[in-house]
Amino acid sequence: QHGRVKLKSTAQQEEEKRKEREKKLKIYVAARDAIFTKRMEGVLDDEALQLTQQLLSSNPDFATLWNYRREILLHLETKMYEAELLFLESCLKVNPKSYGSWHHRGWVSARLPRPDWARELGLCDRCLSLDDRNFHCWDYRRMVVKMSGVPVDQELQFTDRLIGSNFSNYSSWHYRSTLLPLLHPESPDPPSPCMDNTMARQKYELVQNAFFTDPNDQSAWFYYRWLLGRAEREEMISCVFVSREEERVAVAFSRPVNASSSGLMLVLDGQPQRVEWRSVHPHFRHSPVWICALPPGTISDIINEHNLTVHWTEKHTHRDCALYTGEIMFMCSCTFCVTEYMLFELSVEKTSVLQSELQSCNQLLELEPQNKWCLLTIVLLMRALDPLGYERETLSHFQTLKEVDSMRSAYYGDLCSKFMIENTILKMEYAEVRVFSLSDKNLTMLCHLDQLLLVTHINLSCNQLLRLPPQFAMLQCLEVLEADDNAIENLDGLYYLPKLQEVSLKNNQISKLSDLQLLTSCPKLTCLDLRGNPVTQIANIQSELTELLPSVTDLLI
Image (cartoon, rainbow, N blue to C red):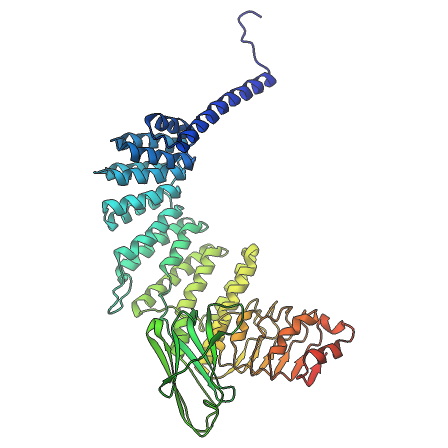
């Protein structure tokens, strides 16, 4: 056996490793305690600097030590910052994604009288070549670029280079989305497209190369969605409703607002009114629809004419209303606002670009008929170009999406519901009617209810709805609700609908008497159909409902 290496048993090796770890831990804890003691005593010397360096070299994620180290460097006021940068490089080798190391490097660089920004960019290049999704490094690079004044087009070329080597570089695509608006800012007066047609096509060609190369990689598709993104909507008062009978005013805005902080003011016949604005539901502090009650007798006399103006002082806009003699109500809505709310704002050039993009995506779909990213993008392009004209194709693509990406079928169902509601609103606006039918549309959710302020009759039957959400209370003119053959078990949205008279909820999942409690806030409700709901099986339900809803004279259970 002479000359042979004696092999240690596994147990011996583990024991030796344990002892080694314990030894290192004792050294680490002793150094840590010494540092904490020094900091508590306010000691800011070279020894403390060395102790923090000793610990941070092995554990660069100790934020307290970085804080202490900065205190020491500020106190010593020595020219140690260059050496500090070298030390930080060694820490980044231990952990390239150390929050503390990157933050401290930014702090040190900012204190240098003449920072070598080219060196810092070189460091970022090296780190990103090892891990192109190191978001700490990307954040640091953005700081360096800002401080050093690197031209935007130069940074755009940098992203081109990284994307060219790896189409799946999500961080580079995202960085491009922050650079392009800087390189091609919109001109506020007059408005102009973000990029001219030629430049737009060049940007689309880059991302097309990416998703034609790897259609299943999501990075390029997310950037593409951004590139196709819609413009900001104009903020305005989209609708006003005035009722003589109830002596109240309802106002709809293009976005949720807080009336108390948005400067909402009502002027009646030239006189500002002291009114209390309330949202349509207690759940909402911000809402697209707000209501106020006028003092009794203010506008109830039908022989008098009144002029009202609603001012949104925060946005320096207003809407004028005229309640003429003999009129019991006034209503006005902006069809252009509704259309803008639903659709992209597209110039002729932009439309031609999107039409070309739709053709490209359809070509890819022929090669990859089950690619979910391609299918979803085609749906969005169709929505941007002609939502009503492409409705049938949109529904077909959604059905395919649910089949090829079944784990997200609920998401596609909700998105399809949103688009179908938008289309119905557009059709309603073009026809100028106040009856809204969404029956048998396979709806899984409700949205854009603020656009239905003036609707008097809504049919939601034969869908897959589980609830009437609080936003449903925005239908302040609603008189008839049909929601048969769903799976509704929650009626949160049936809160203080002052004109609601008839509610049909046949064949739903309402199971408790308390689920119907909010109907007591609807003063004109006279007809209620609950047939086919579990609640009808409760003992004495007829008398219970009669007591709960005494105004209902036509009760069907």
